[in-house]
Length: 51
Image (cartoon, rainbow, N blue to C red; front, side, top):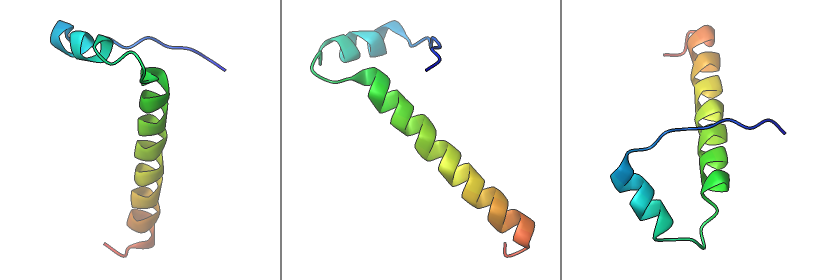
């Protein structure tokens, strides 16, 4: 599995740190996957001319 780094504002980092039981990397990964799926569906609809 590849890794990459994201930057977040300091106030957001403090909020993330206040919830150490949450696996934020997993939350981000799932969010990215969901966004990609939505974009793929949109592109399929766009190509089919059903918009």
